[in-house]
Structures are given as C-alpha cells and as structure tokens.
Image (cartoon, rainbow, N blue to C red; front, side, top):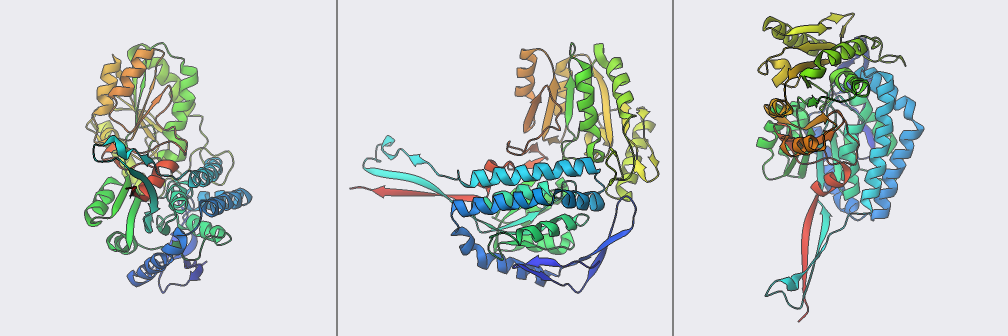
Length: 473
C-alpha cells in the first residue's frame, strides 16, 4: 500500500517510494514516500507561515487540542499499538504500554500548556532599579524540526510534538525510516483536532535529504533530535545558531549492593535489560554486583531470562521478538563474539534463532569491549563482580555516556553517595536505570546529549524568554 505524507492538513503524493519491511516477517507492509528537498522546504514554508496563527492560540485552546489528541489515542489504542508492533517488531504488550504512556505524555503537555508563565523580577533589588517594574514572558520559537527514532515511534514523537504545541510552535516531523506508519497515523488523529492546518507536518524520506534540510533551514528555529551520538554531533555542527536538543546514546549501569532482596530486583533487571529487545536508550546494559550476592544473582537472573517468550510481536504472550533489522542483529552478534574471544563468558544466549537475537547475559567482560563501552542497543546485558560500591561507581562513570544509572542498596549513606557521584543526568535509587515516567526531566551528560525532555522542561527549551521592564517615573 502506497502511503502519502502530511503537509498543511493535506495528504501529498510523492514521486518516489521505498518499501517498508516488517522486521519480524520481512514482508513488505507499505511503500513510504521519499520526499525531495523541495518538498521538505515546502513543508517548512507552510509551518513558517502558520507560526503566527499558532502563537495566537490561547493556553486553553492549546491544552484542549492536546487533550483531544490524548482522547483519540485512547479510542484508537489497539490500532496504534498494532502499527507499532508491525513496523518495529515491538511485542504487543510493550506496544500497548507505549500507547498508554503516550496518552499520559499528551495529557502532561496539556497541563503544562496552562502553566507556561514567566516570573516577576525584583527590579528595586538593584541600586538603579527603583520605580521599575519587570517581568518575563515565554514566547514560542516558531518552527520546530523534530527528528525521531524507531524504538518508541509514538511516545518519543509525543515528547517533541506535545511540548511544541503546548508552547505555541509549529512542527515539521521527520520520523525514523523504519517507523513512519506511527507518525502518519498520528497525523490522521491530529487532522481531527482544532490544531491549525500547517502547524503539524510529517515528512518521510532519507535522513540525508529530510534531516539535513530541516537542520540547515534558517526558518527552522530549533531541532529536537533523538538518535545516535554521531548523527547528533553532526546536527549540532550544521545547525548554526538555532537551538538544538539532543537525546543520544547510553550504556546504562546499575549497582547491586549487598544485603538487598534479589527476589524484588531480578524481575526488574530482566525488564530493564530485555524489554523491546534492549532497544531502549536507558536499557540496562552494565550490571555490577557485590561479591556476596554475585552467584545468587546470576543464578536467578539467568533462570528468569530463559523464561522469556520469544516469537511474533503481534502475539499477546511474546516478550522478545526480532530487532529492528538483520544488520543490527549481526552487529550485536559480532560484539558478543568479540567479547567471548577476549575472555568473556556467555551465560545464556549469544546467538540468533529463527530470526530473533536471543536474550544474552555476559560476565567477566572487560570495560574496553564494545558490549560494555558502546551502546549495545540489543538484548545483551553485562554482569560483572565488584568488591565495593566505590568500584561500581567508578565502573559506571568510566564511560563516554551519562544518561541514567541506578543502585539497589539498603544503606542511605551509600544511596546519597551514589546520587552525588554518578556522572549521569538521572539517578534511580532502588530501581533500574531504565525507569522513566514522562513528566520527569530526562536527559544526559557527556555524549548522551544536551537539553532535557519531560514536558515542562522541553516546553521551556522550545520557548524564548523575553524581559519587559516598565519605568514608572
């Protein structure tokens, strides 16, 4: 089925198309339009010309539009989840969970739209500030260029579209090449709302054409991107003076201290390491377990991981399905083989069966190997021994990334120590680093990116603070 892209409230036909294959069955599920640079520029022009109309919407009107999007997603929950499972091979239970989170995300955006305020400035606190009245207002930037990844094709889109609408901006969205159907379905829903035509546009095609045009356009005032560090750094280098928010890679780490209840921890670790085939920015990739608990943890962890159900993403019982494409699976396999050749032990998995990369646990892994120091983005987790929490903190910080980290401990001083010393954007105490709810600030340090997502925080990224001072003399 040939799809169309969405610009100015209309469905547009392209001259060129690319086949979209199911990652699990490899069948062609759609033909996706491949926009030209001229078509991208037209979409940008439409968004640019609509920016004043969008900026004039009241907070009430913007909130109502976002609430309507949330309600439409509730009404179309099953359909939206099936699209995710089909195009991304995300098991249905996780796809349904993503839609539920996406509904929350738009609802949070609606609430924050009503809370977007500036602040009073105490002008008379300065020697020369007497008889002056000052305040700030938050104004929309204009056109937001949003570039999104495949792993959460509705919720990560919502983390860009929601705050953009809440702040009064217009959007040109470039979804991941493997998951455009979710973005086009969102366009069908938004088309039913009162959002001004031209305020939301979806352009599909290659990153080189669509992405580069968005990044270099003078009419686009901000780029918000989630993806790989190499692409993110390239965007930052090309973007000039426009705002850039980057949510990039991670190899999230976890410490398991002594004297904790493993029966409560192991199920969380299984979820953190293997949900969505490990294709999560904060997937649990590196686990450091105190000597006293290491053997017991490994036994319980491996036993639980081998119980995961492998199969079609459309089946309700499936826990693990195919990764996003065969090349990624082969890349992950080569990293496991490299680790094994350098002394690592494959506890379970480490191979591909029936087109699915099996859940894999490695131990005795050197920190310089790819499965440890790079973002593995696969159902692979490293578990190593430590003799002290200090060793675990040092190991987690020995990384080019710093998105989130976690620690399980019953010692409050240890928890405070970790919270201060972890070099990351978010610390989870007595939880896995994979934990996220959508209103919290979310963003990393080092090569994990710049800027913060989370509705309140992203909205402020997407506005300009203007100062107004009245001289009362």
